[in-house]
Each structure stands twice: as C-alpha cells, then as structure tokens.
Image 1 (cartoon, helix red, strand yellow):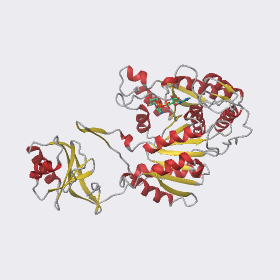
Image 2 (spheres, protein in one colour):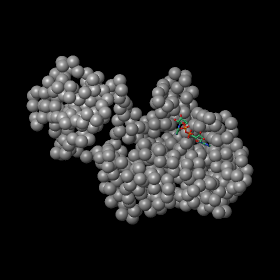
Image 3 (tube, rainbow, N blue to C red):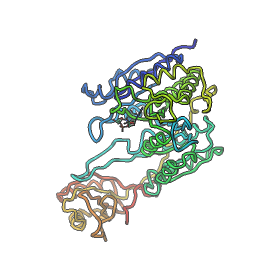
Length: 478
Ligand code: NAD
C-alpha cells in the first residue's frame, strides 16, 4: 500500500462542518490514503480576537503539507474582517482558480443539457487586491490591479490546462473597451500567449455579452479564462445554470501549494440542518486526489457520486418532483455515495482518471523593462462647493516651475476646462498638472504650493511615460 499523503483540512463555517464530515467519510470509505491535519480558521478564530482569522500554527501546517481541503468560510459583508479566502489564496500564491461546471442532464434539472465548461479565474489580482480608500466624505475608491506576470501566469495555466484535459478552445473575457489599460493588458497577454498554443482555438469576448452568451448557450464554451472579479461572478452563474451552486468544486493552484474547495459559500441559513449538498466540496476533493496522484480513488469517488445522482438520490437543492427519486440530507447523501463505491454511472459518461495529471508546469512569466519619463501629476482634492470653475481658479494659483493645470475631472469625467453644467459632480476632484520638463522635485514643490493654498490633497498619481507611451488614461471627454 502506498504511503499516506499529509493534507490540511479546515471545517469552515455555516454548512462547512457538515459537508466536510460527509466528504471525509466518503474519501475514507473509498480508501483515500490521507494523513489529515485539522486546523481551525474563519469566524471562530476572528471572534477569539485574531483579526487575520488564522493562527500561525495553521500557516505552518499549510506550508508543510502544501495541500489544503477547505470548507467555506463566512466573510462579513460591507465591513469587519477581510476575506480569509482571499488572504489564503494570495499568501500561498494560489494564482489559478479552476472551476469545472458540468450539467448532469437528465438527472439534475437544467436548461443546458450539454454544458461542460471550465472557468479559470485569476485569483490574486484585480479588485481583490483589497486596496480601498475614502477620498472624500462622499467618495470611496477601490484599486483594480492587473499585472503582466499575473496575467501571463493565469493565461498560460488556462492553455496548459486545456492541453492536459484535451480541451479544444480557450476563450478570454475582459472589458477592455472600457478599462483599456488593465483589462487591455490581460487581453494583450492572452493574444501573445495563445500564439504559443496553435493547436488550441482561442477567442476573446467582451465580458458583458460573453456572460450573456454563456448563460444562454454554455455549450459554446470550453475553457474560459478571466480576471478575478468576472471569474468569481460568472463561475457562480455557470454552476447555478448547470444545476446548482452546490454541485461545483474548485481547485486553487499555486507554484508551491494548492487548495481545494466548493465554489459556494457557507450558506449560514442552511447550517446545522443536515440539508446542504456536499457535492461541491466532494468534487473539490476529487480534484485534490488527482493533484496528489491518487487517481484510482478520485475515479471511484467521482463515478460513485454520478451513479448516486443517476439513481435519483438528491439533496433539496437539486431535488425535482417526478425526476428525483429520494430526497435526502447531507449524511444520507454521503451514505448513498459510499454504497455505490465501485459502481459506475450507466447513462452519464463515467470518468477515467488513469492518465489524469496536474496541469503541466508553465514557463515562468516575463517582466518587461521600460524607459520612463515624468509628465506631471494628478492631484486629488476634496472640494466642498463642487464647482469645478471655482476649484480651477483656486488650485490654478499653484501653477509654476513649468507645471500647469491642464484638466480637472470628477469621477473620471472632464469638468474643466469647458465642462458642462449638466455633469454631476461629487466632492472629490482630480486635478492634472503637466509640463514638458517635469521632475520629481518640481512635482513635490507643486504639492507644497497646493497645500499652502489651503487645499486638501487626498491622493496623488504620478503621470509617467513608458518607452514613450503615456502610462495613464485621458479623462472621459478630454
Ligand atoms: P452561499 O453560496 O453560501 O449560499 C447561497 C445560497 O445557495 C444558499 O442560501 C443556499 O440556498 C444555496 N447553497 C449554497 N451552497 C449550497 C449547498 N452546498 N447545498 C445546498 N444549497 C446551497 O452564498 P452567500 O449566502 O452569498 O454567502 C454566505 C457566506 O459564504 C458569506 O459570508 C460569503 O462571504 C461566504 N463565501 C465563502 C466562500 C468560500 O469560503 N470559498 C465562497 C463564497 C461565499
């Protein structure tokens, strides 16, 4: 018998402990060779006063085992502690979130009988950097960060995944008609990397119409790669239209560690009632078994699970009168899967993981170098009267050293010079100063002059060229 593989397990919050117990029971009965270390993370740890939601000893376990099976965790909305899911993914460098969304027609009700797509979601960047500021009493800001190496890693992973799993097409979704620099970079990298994989079809869709097409005709897609936020939203949509968010598992893959989970959350309203569907976490565990090389167990668990669905043994979320045969709770569903270990589905296509492997190690991302030149600075100020012309008169007095006020915008829309009185203004304005011979010192002196005028600077952004191209966008209407 091969040796036990150490893994770290967290039971999570809400329905987490129930679906984890069901999953581990099935893995054990299927003969998974695991040496399990339990850690506690999430709500209980926060409430003990640890604002990170995870103890140092838990990090130590994760860095040692490098394999994490995690039940969902509750994250407060709007305020409170930061998402531990995001922290874990980013701290461990788990850049690729892979979410297969498959329909099980005619056993689970869905409008999409032939759906079998995989969403590869970028996991570390985008608005999930969690860098947010209050610019004025009335305006909040979040930073959306997209990097070239981050985009390259995820796009290459998507193509490597497609190669490994014999998928024919990789589609990219972005909103680069609006976010020309951030999503534009993601799209540009997609075009570059796709050229390295001539055997795989590639295409790009603007995310809004792409999402509509995916919700309507998911069989038109195979692998879809996208930045973090779109991937988060659209993988829930894809799982739900396949039958239930309770059915999809996911892997979070990094260079060193990997985490496996359900795509859904902790569903607190369903907690403690033996109601939840453990399938998402179980399928996450199947991905984990392949990752650690226990393909035989992965295959027998996955096939027994499909047979259970075929036999109409369903939890409440997928139960349909006339289609399902038996409505069961979490524990009973797990028992039903255990009883079918060794069996294969009769109608659905049985899985064969004999040769399944982790996606190949992609080549390391590139870092480009560029000559930079300073053009000026955007200075954000709070201006209570909300009148752009008054602000221009006031802040324009800071012109000097060859730097001059060029433009004022409000929420990205140019409002000075030649603004329209119809444009609604908040109390946070961006004032752009440029000059042909801008230097860091001149830009600092300018800020000092602005402060001396009694204005409130809330934030600054340097305006730089990279190899002769502006590294900043124009204002809307500029
Ligand atoms: P959710 O996915 O937890 O639940 C939404 C609804 O989907 C539930 O009310 C339930 O009707 C259904 N559902 C979800 N999982 C199910 C299952 N296994 N079986 C049956 N029905 C299921 O989404 P939410 O209510 O928006 O989030 C609840 C909490 O989970 C939040 O604190 C959120 O931050 C967190 N969350 C955690 C993760 C994670 O740990 N990876 C992911 C998403 C959300």
